[in-house]
Amino acid sequence: MQHLEFPIVTFFNAVLLLDPIPFHYKSGNVAMLSMTIWLLLVNLVYGIDAILWAGTVLIKDKVWCDISNRILLGATVALPTACLCVTVHMEQIASVRSVLTTHKSRRRRQYYEAAACVLFPCVFVALHYIVEGHRFDILEDFGCRPSTYTSWPAIILVWTLPLALAIASLGFAGASLAHFMRRRISFAHHLQHRSALTTTKYMRLIMMSVVLMTWTVAVTAFTLYYNVPSIRPWTNWADVHSDFGRVDQYPLAFLPETTIRGQIVLWWFVPISAWIFIAFFAFGQEAMDQYRAVGSWVAQTVLRRKVQVAKLSGTSNFTKPTPPPLGSFGDMSMNTLASPSDKKRPSDASESLPSSKLSPSSFDHSWSETASQYTSTAGDETLYSPTTPIEGPPGLPHLSYASGKPNDSVV
Image (tube, rainbow, N blue to C red; front, side, top):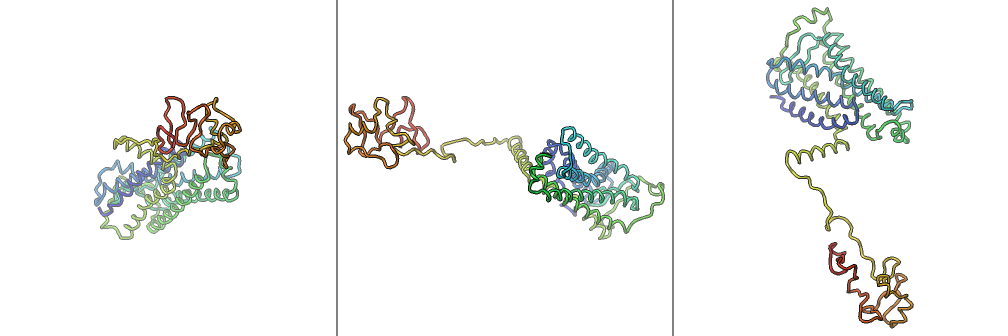
């Protein structure tokens, strides 16, 4: 296999393109869902063909070639049509025209987009039979490719139509950006009333369409430049479709170097288109949530690992409560902690105790202790001491702020 990178790149793209499908399906965005599926199918076809026809041009499976060629032909117009649907909808949202946003109108738009992104490519595939000279071609290392009788009808149908769709998509994208620039200050508020989009998602859709359609225009122009020199006259239906069941085989050894380089450039059009799409949608918040969900599912189902749930503990990052200063709980004096029978006004306490044991606190209006302990006149019972705990309800442990665990004293 001379091009080992072909299947690796395409299958890797196919895996990445699987991620946004559930999100677009749930949001009901038919155009974006269609674009994702078409890119996925084309990458799968390119990868399978690169494996089956690596270093050979043998006819291995005609049915597969017929099916895969129809997919490749449909994607030729499906991608620019899907981008056109996206940009038309973005222009309608950003404009000042009156647009209905009811459930019925949304459902109608989904039907239109489904017809444009699915039925229209099927019609295009059927029309391609007009310029299909024989059944298909097989290129070594590339696989099956649709055959096209290069003529003026083929240029109009096969290449001019996708080019016109891409240019129209760029036109609507430009109009959408113009609406954004005119009311960029109030644009977020405007979007909230017209759709569920945010400004970030709106700009992401527009920029994706602009970049992807610019790339499509460039590649289509290159294809025209590549095929126009070999144009042939259209004679009649019988002449064009004579020996239609023929399969042409092209080993690389018999192809000119310019033809091989042209085929390589055209082959890379599909992976690069997928990369453009992935770059805009595979790193958003929705995609990241989907990646985490898939990773969690793989860890639990495939690897049989248990998902660890964070639990609160004494060593957590929560800030431990700070004890209030001794002698004051806000505006509440330490005397409030004494039993009701032992409460005394500061003036009464000062009369019953020597003046050397109490002094006014400079920090609040309560009284703080200056001697070793504060004893009541009832006897030797200690009401409060800095070295003794404050007695709580019987049977309940005291809380130590230093450790965050039950203890026997307050530090």
